[in-house]
Length: 89
Image (cartoon, rainbow, N blue to C red):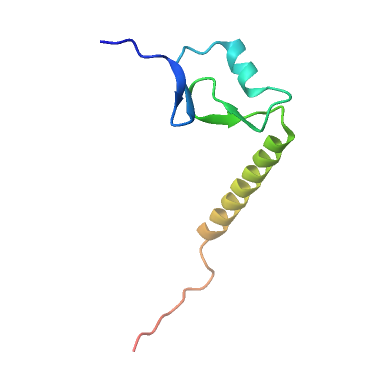
């Protein structure tokens, strides 16, 4: 059986299945001077570059949307004060 490479690119999407080290993990998520998306240190695809200010905006928007969803689900779980009667003719 042929040895398959543990890192590379397929259809333009990078992959890396080498065992991650702490240094490689830290350097992958913090790359000053690079774009917002960088190659993942382990797995398939891209991840956010936390050294780029646009990544922090994305994280803030996601956090705000999650907080809004949690608030709306808490409001929906509260029962109404009066039962509603529906009459169908």
